[in-house]
Length: 310
Length: 310
Image (cartoon, rainbow over all chains, first blue to last red; front, side, top):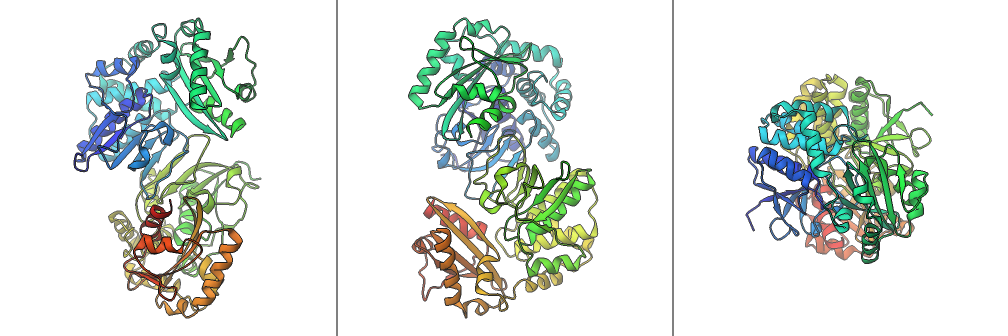
């Protein structure tokens, strides 16, 4: 075990904000003299890889279990236990930097917990550089910018706040890129779903939630053309059913989000499919339901479902 | 219902930090143009009243239920549901400013949650005035100073950090008092236990915790002379037993904390009394156990008990 090293990581099924925020916060902590390392709990997606390549930064080291290597950890971009490392209960969480709801999180002792209702963890980190008086490098500016573009779908998501937009506009020149051009290129790099297997589609950005008595998994894929996914609807549903059966889920929801037109078509499997209809006031037709204007899992999918199931 | 008014309050059985931090954060929010009101969930203690009188500030309004008057609330100095308003589940928590462990807290949506491992909520609020560029009035400086002195037992508690000391030293001149003299006078005002009934003694600063399968209540009284409490040990234990029976508790612990000598004598009632012996490596003699150097419930009492019971 490295003496006293603190591991920093985001959630399972890492997205661009989770990977970039772990790397960025590790950079800030190191510059403040702390012994930390950014790690990740899953594969790097195509969108995230595009961002890492653009700014010449290596992906963090992959880990499944963290307790073998550290006594203390810092969570970024998540707090819910079931979204974290499998053995999270065996380590001490000493800090959390997040922008999600708080649930299934408990500590024995006080800690530094900073959650803000902004669109992206990196927006908070950008503030923390300023508060600490540490200069932001070109690479870290690029990673924070990429995270904001990703989480806000280039500012189209309702989760996006003025603070996120301001941070992105401030970071783009530091990163040396044109915000809109780079943003669209990066989102497109992550939106190619035709090459993914059904299993990849449903798990690549899937999060588990406790809602009332049941466990629900909500997956999301960003697409330019929903057909890339919906042409294989039956195979995708079979993959979802398999997860429902093996994990005892009450619901598996997949949101296929059109990032250009800003709406989502959802597929759902499990005993609680009717809860989806109730939550969003829609009916499934041929297994599909259109949620107009819905692009944010956090702000537009989880709360209505939680209200019905919680 | 006042249109859109947000209520700000601390925990049940309010102590000086909880009352003062609610008043102080309401002051800051109002100066930032927000429609808020500080309220309290219980009686004002003698120490707190001393502080309020010293700086000419009225106690917040007393409330038992909050949902009749507000849809949204801000919690200060606590986050655990069972320490909050009875109907906390019926309102939306939009902010938390706290310095305790996080547990039994869950939201549907993202929020502003700021917990820091410092000795006092007011220390965080003092920073927030600076971050907001709002000037601290003499009255609010006095309340923040009082909260820090109270929570840190005039800097003797192990929960006290450099930040707390720095904040107090900065606030004392603004409040126009001599830190040490005022601090001792205030603590003494709250340490007169001879005039309290056994029921008052065990409930005046009592917090409930979920530990593993059981509910435990941990009360604490600050004294100059422990005899004021221990002379009536049997009556105090009877009062604790009554609470254990009526509330189905596994443990009722009362820490009688000598604020001059910085240690505590504990009394315990309930099925889990042996957990106390295990947690602290002590044996009860005549129903009393001395915990040397223990003055902080949060840092020195809850974590060891949680380790044994959790």
